[in-house]
Length: 441
Image (cartoon, rainbow, N blue to C red; front, side, top):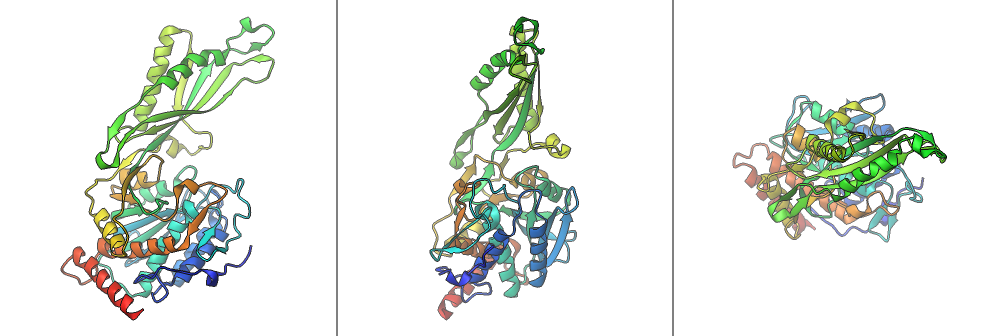
């Protein structure tokens, strides 16, 4: 792997906490991002990067703890500022990001990080979502170096397994951690997501009877039995929800994978159909399952001999807790103060007001909101259309800008120690520090 040449990065961003005259320079952010991209961390192989993140936080004087997940060598890394342990902390803000990635697939030179044209960087996982993770870690380092004392502690939770069975966020939710607010740092390109769809993986099994293909009347063709079910599934319509300024969304179903038969010259005795049911707020995994069961019952009225059953399952899922739980839709109150803190931080940098949206995809904010009861928004650098592609690439100034926004949001959400005027004055203090920083420049 080639060396990162952060000196070739030509930063245009200058903030109070992140910037060339700030506690954390833009080139340091670039170097940090490059290092975590250079360390492969495909799901299930996260250990090396986890150990790097642990050592880095401790070198910077932050409280760093390892949270074991499922099996040896797999763990979340918890950075804290302002408390001795996540077991004691009642956090003002949790920044949340995953450090596992999808496999390399068709990406050439996935770990050969370098600055491109003076302002961009590419690599596997850089958008999904190591840039967001780097921005949150840089924010914590900058606040620590600046000597900022917060009324309530700040956390970055670096979790594993987001790209598969979500055991990192599942374990985090089981830990008992408390926080007033959380930000999932998935790539939103400067927008702010207040919620996301859930995803219920379903497996439909249709039974037949195997026989020789030369005498098909002696068997029961499972594919033929499945056809009426498939026709009903393709016609099915699901819940529609009006989320006001976020838009109108409806549940969807994608029949995504099918396997049947044992050989070319056999009547197939079983057909297995995999489906991805995307749920909207108000729907649940249990409801999605009941809906498919109702479709099976309807088909059975026309064909009493139909043998079919549906269950929650996914081809790459084997961990029973996540199979039982499923992945639920999420929605945070549009009036949450966290949006005010985040938006004011962005506007203070001369940016336009942060646009509100709802994600049709899924994020681990599900665990933070539904299991931990933490009002959560999704905000992070990067274009999410580049996730999992052969050309994951990020604007470095966007990463630095996001880190600065995280700094200012953290101060507003956690409060400055000794500031009796409250959190609103905390944000005013940030603006004043910014003004002085610009005068020095």
